[in-house]
View 1 (cartoon, rainbow, N blue to C red):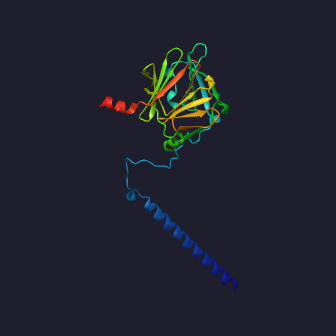
View 2 (cartoon, helix red, strand yellow):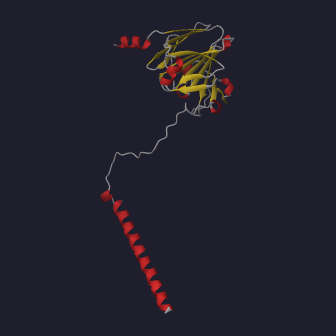
View 3 (tube, rainbow, N blue to C red):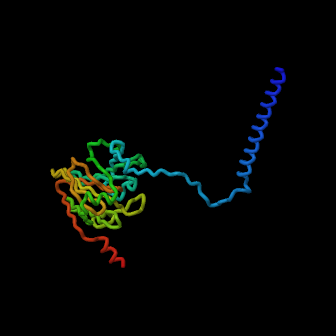
Amino acid sequence: MNNINLNKIIRNVTYILIIFLIVLILYNCILLLNNSPFNKTSYKNSLRVENVIEYDVYDAFNINSSYKIKFKEDDISKLPSLSKAEILMLNYDPITSKPNYSAIFFNNDFITDSSMEIISYIDETDFPNITFLEYEKLKNEFNNNYIDTISIINIDFSFSNFLYYNNEYHHFNNGIQSIDPSAKLPITYKNIVIDTSSKKENTLYVYSGGLFKEFKKDSSIYLTKGKTFWMTLNDDSKITYTFSDVENKLKKQNN
């Protein structure tokens, strides 16, 4: 009797295993048929599309993890990696009145060369607290105060001009538009910051997106997302700015 029950159990287990194997074989056959080249549509020019996470360097801005590079060169048109610098800084030697350029990179996306004198991290005390905004939010902070022409006159009678058109500030030096040597394109910025702290004013004049606002240096400032030209005036410099409707004048000249 026990032998009969044992044989019956073995037979049932065998049947179950056979059924399982048949199901597994059928499943694999279906997979093979679905992956057959006869059932595929060929797209010769198709690209593999993956989810891309866009990294906004301005949303993730952290001055403590940024790099500062001091250049030996005093000619803006000869500065390397200029198109990749998020902030270009300019001040004037108090004795020689020659320009000194430094660049701020929010990451290490630059190539070192002999024109770079010092490469260092930035201390947070070097800058006020900066918040980058979308243009619509920026307009509310700046109260729609529109200015499109900025002129800086230095002791050696050199002129730096920034004209705002096509949503960017175009840099001119003594009437000649500055060109980025690496990109071979005009040097343009989204923001211009004029630091008058050396004149004991403790004021930052901020031009952003064609708008203007004064900030105290020890307060937070707002900029639109994009590259910034940051200039510190010496005691012998002065600044003028006007609204001259540059963009419409250029359009009329081109028509």
